[in-house]
Length: 161
Image (cartoon, rainbow, N blue to C red; front, side):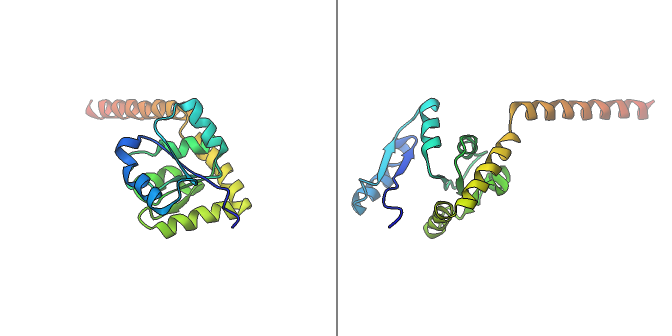
């Protein structure tokens, strides 16, 4: 099997989120192929992102979805949920899957791992997507919004006279 040397790395708050996963891994006998890490500081997290063949984010509920953007900024192809805010945030820079369907998640992972052209396309689109959320872009949008608000107020004052 061409994927036998791959390892699944799970990073995050182990105590609240990974107890069931850890038990499932033990019961399945996959301890050699799955590693659990708790909180990881960003400089170390960057190394994980940059070393990863892909970043999987099958979240059920997400307010914004910063981790997939972090992965994209580190040139890692992303597979993510087709729910919540993720399709809007990630657009076509990620392979989107049903987070409640393990076969769909596996399909998405296999697609990224087996198609080098797709991998490179996702890396490039990911870098472009991250650029849409830079501080410079955010500041420009705030200035633009203030300008629209100010113009609207001037229009109302002129109309009231």
